[in-house]
Image (cartoon, rainbow, N blue to C red; front, side, top):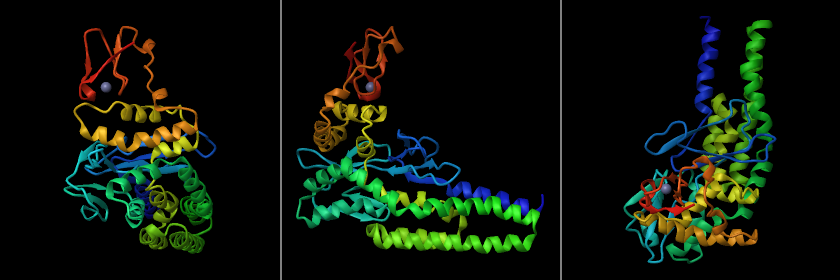
Length: 358
Ligand SMILES: [Zn+2]
């Protein structure tokens, strides 16, 4: 194989590696296509996952500008004041933490007492710090953080702000990718190696522009994750494949405090199946999982307030699945919508959740 082809093949492989977004396993990425209105919810575990992380592939042609990687908020509290933390599997587990000094961030983990969870950005900790500086106790601060993560107004503002501050990247990143994978080979084949080198030098100027814009974003738009975005800026200066995906990689920090439900509420997608499933899970905590009840105590009052503004209530999401999908079924699980034949009383997948009759 000619050396130039080998170079292109290796470059394409590194590009594909950079096109994979590694998120905490419990997280989701929302994606809206360039001209689409509807959000798709992609769990981080759909394609590939490790013990703590999952992969969300970016669209092969940049920019994947409709991507919003949202992890939600990983702490919950119940009426007794106990603090629960989300596990990599998305369940909430009770910690022995009670006070502020038992909650801390040690990159890249949030630690609460005896348990910890991976966070996708230090920006996720910002609302907790705000709560602490406001003089709130840890339980009230957790409820406030959950409310902020779910807030549709805040999600709308975050989306708009990101769209505005990232506009130059939406031009630079595709220009760099096109120039690298299309322009350089074409110049090399049709004009000569010297012209390919000139084009390479010009493309480095595009990388410089991407890097400078990231420095600007780090300083003026998202100071709470300044050092992480600056790290992206440095890498964008020396690794072309990182610069090609700078927009998507930076969005991980931008949406680190946002819950997927907030974006769906903000875009009036209350009929989204993922949102229905999320609210059903809050309405029907599994009997054998105390963390489910804590999650419902933390998130459900805020969901109820958001729905009230839309003249809705959480009970509107408690509907039966379509029986025509399984005409023999006589009952269903109100949590996971599994359907069952006569004779079964509980759903094993949902911790022996009592079934409802059609
Ligand atoms: Zn079930």
